[in-house]
Image (cartoon, rainbow, N blue to C red; front, side):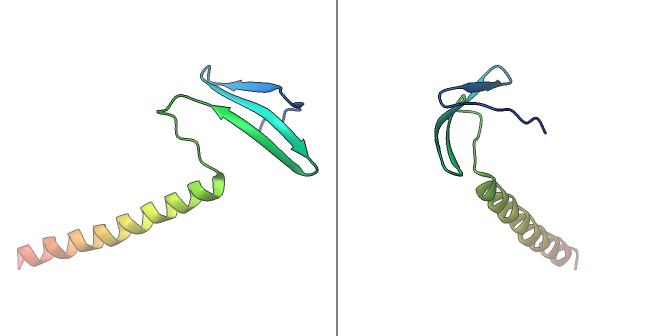
Length: 75
């Protein structure tokens, strides 16, 4: 992990096309702005983890159903 210090209105650039700017610092909370191309998804980590879990569950459910259907066709 790269750790950087930034002040209000300072930014970092990631991969030449994503800019992260510090907008505000209040106590232990930091507000950031992210400028990225529309095709680059940007999620809060907790939301990203929920999406991953939902995708895993969908694959498990749909995968099992597909396997059942395949086995029924072979009977």
